[in-house]
Amino acid sequence: RIKGAIFDLDGVIVDTAKYHYLAWKWLADQRGIPFTEHDNERLKGVSRMRSLDIILEIGGLTLSDEEKEEMATRKNELYLEYIRRMDESEILPGAKEYILTLRDKGVRIALGSASKNAVFILERVGLSELFDAIIDGTKVSKAKPDPEVFLVACESLDLSPEDCAVFEDAAAGVEAAKAAGIYVIGIGSTDVLGDADEIVAGLHELVS
Ligand code: G6P
Ligand code: MG
Image 1 (cartoon, rainbow, N blue to C red):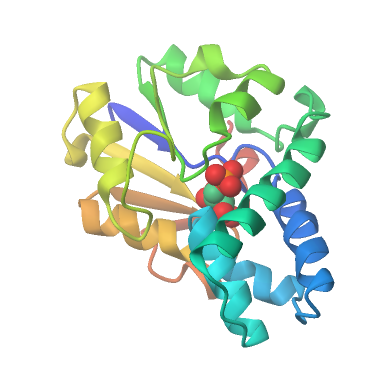
Image 2: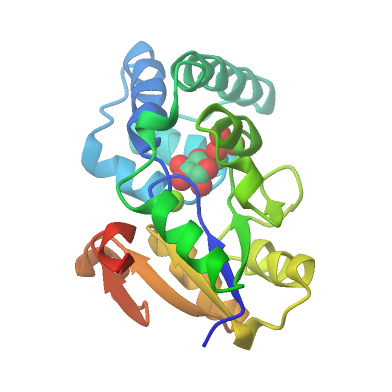
């Protein structure tokens, strides 16, 4: 029986991957970079800057740090245009119900996300109150697959990794959870999440 549940945000609680994609796609088009939805899979779970590096690599482009900084800022402005309009209808099926069920059982709830927009999104969709701890891209410096975000989440819940479970939709996130020594439930398909301890299509499958 677990005492703490740590949730990734993008792709687990809300489907923001489509907005990340649209924002990056617009910038990639501007630069003539052939960026596809298939490529987008590699961006899941990794930091904003690392995402940009992957896109530039696809386009075979090298930019100065200053230009990269500018592009990342522009991407976030575009992304904010999308997430500003989010509301509770964009919570993925079963996510809120499952978190409520766990809370009823006394399980402590944390967020473990790479996003610097996590708090804003949780507020937009009205879920921030359900979290005992929120660890996001503003609180940690090492991005997934580094285990830092999940280890800090365990610490914030005052629990050891063995007493927790992580819910993740990205390969980098599954790797991070494993490296932290935490049981990981993959959300999505087996071809991306092969290393997870368990895989379900979505949190709705876990609501009884
Ligand atoms: C999540 C997403 C990534 C995104 C990262 C940073 O992990 O899965 O695709 O790059 O957050 O998000 P941010 O909102 O800080 O740009
Ligand atoms: Mg994710």
